[in-house]
Length: 292
Image (cartoon, rainbow, N blue to C red; front, side, top):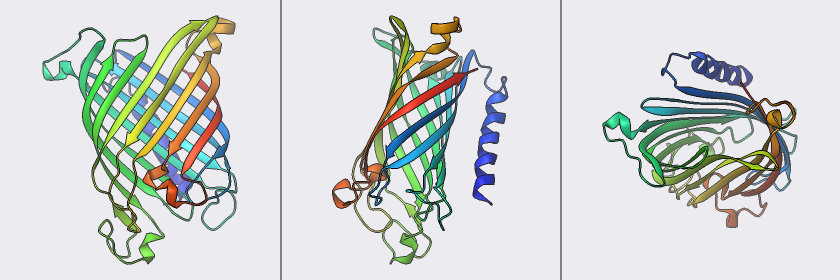
């Protein structure tokens, strides 16, 4: 299947899914389209800073017994992160879905003090990129989740994580314990991951929202080339002005602000072994969201 067609197919599939308002009999929902841009993204083994534009489709909704979260990112790099075979920058897609079962779903709702709810989170990630590496990642995660009593939301989950990926370079090397010979398909060892996510509105002269997530993923055994992976930290944090409310009394419709990304040991690669410096990213981004 053509990569661009595959990207469009995934995006339209998600749009169709979240457009069905009766699917989970949602009590509330929020859907947005966003765009962010930065000039200092990094990729393993690439010594240069990379310019990227990332278009996102995001959806969150809640019903009596839990909540759903979708995010689809379409990532477009400049030529410093080239597409396989050249002809411009690489194109990638990354999709995240998580369903959280509230304690109510198990007949054991919990709410006390700073804890809003205890639940069970389960979901998957899918990603693909048309560079020479030709990554195709699939992750599955499940584990307990705590929701804290704050304005907006603050959630912390500890999940059991399983990852399968593809490495077109590894297919040319002898078999490792993580990969079938010649296939380039890599099965990492299961690991644990901490997942923190938040979205907290506040007033400071103007209406703002502090939002983002941080994932800490444990080492996941050896990669497709037989190299031991390292724990991975990814932070995305944004300070967003509610522009719709500030200038036109349309609360929660248009947000604009700076976003920061910190990514250490990107994809589990040991940053100390990569002389290019591409396994550590520190990126300021301009970010915008339109909610509907």
